[in-house]
Image 1: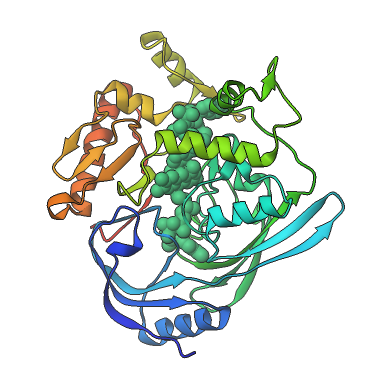
Image 2: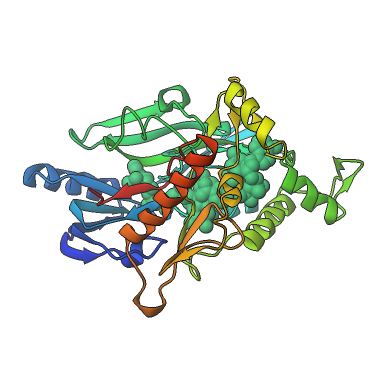
Amino acid sequence: MALSIQQNIPLQAYNSLRLPASAEYFCTVTSEEELCAALDYARQQGLEVTPLGGGSNLVLAGDLKGLVIKLDIRGISSRPQANSVEVCFAAGENWHRAVMDCLDRGWYGLENLSLIPGTVGAAPIQNIGAYGVELADLFVCLRAVEISTGELCTFDAAACQFGYRDSVFKGAFKDQFIILDVTLRLHTQPSINIAYPALQQAAAESGLLVNGSPLDKLTPQLVSELVCRIRSSKLPDPAEIPNAGSFFKNPLVSSTHAQSLLRRYPQMPTFAQPGGQVKIPAAWLIDQCGFKGVSRGPVAVHKHQALVLTHNLNNGGGDGSQLLALAAELQDAVEQRFSIRLETEPRIYGST
Ligand code: FAD
Ligand code: NAP
């Protein structure tokens, strides 16, 4: 089928915050060939290119110039290994459906990452993580197309430079590649990881632990169900309350900074990191500044989770600049009180 490139396409339905903005040019690609054709077109017309997955980690603060390419390339293939399986997922596969599909096939390791919105192709961009597991733990390699040349490249884990919600695609190679597929190594024997406190507690409450150890009946499927249950109880469903998940990364500070804060705020939660830094939950910092549940017109800090900013569509809704103004208010308040500047997690587009 010939590639269809459209002009002035509204993007409100393509981002989970449901912010109004439009793409100067827009196309959906369902194959590698269509993607290459779209990139050829962009090069010929001198258009900048923005890849789009599920739109769950974006803030559209204005219209997007150039060509927005919605990745809808599908397919899952596998290669058995000793005690494991290498699974290759096309970029347009829905992340949560892929996790469910793997569990059905007896491929384990992704269960803690259940119910994360978005596509597989976007997962390496910020090395998605939750409940004590991150993509990097299972990652083998990815294939990507270089936007400026159309050249196909393969990145192993070292080349991706994964960090805490970070990768080379947010740093040195920002906006330079479109990820085509991602290969992960999954276990063929159940391997349970419920060290994360909220997951431990949920397993204990469900009678799946004895003296802190998981019972045999605690399968990866049950871990996935527990994760989905915890997430649904705490996080607003973007289909009902538009949001982009955590709006800020949890800050990593030096141990000296953490110690000085702990003297003033002994109840502050802290998590020591392997490199010596200390992670402080951004939600706690925002909460301390009294912002939980606060709204500014159509945008708000979620009443159950201070890290999530929401967009109320009633009465016409708002726009990205209102959301960013609220985000800046939170950043300023946290910086003034804790000398920590919160860094936004979603990618901001269209803002000057
Ligand atoms: P998009 O929002 O479409 O894109 C995000 C960025 O990646 C953009 O810069 C885009 O240009 C780029 N991109 C997208 N696809 C490609 C591609 N194929 N090649 C190159 N670049 C690409 N994140 C976590 O890490 N852990 C969580 O637990 C978590 N929970 C969430 C809960 C909720 C309710 C929401 C709304 C979000 C949550 N997120 C979480 C954030 C988000 O789901 C992830 O970052 C996800 O990977 C984004 O996928 P997407 O397809 O929606 O990406
Ligand atoms: P939570 O369980 O209330 O914990 C608050 C924060 O403390 C988390 O952000 C977590 O950091 C940190 N934490 C808790 N226990 C930890 C431990 N044992 N070791 C290291 N860090 C620990 O968090 P929540 O808000 O309900 O989220 C649950 C999980 O889902 C988290 O992993 C979170 O990252 C993930 N999540 C992510 C998004 C997103 O958009 N990025 C949205 C919703 C949920 P980590 O974040 O590093 O785990």
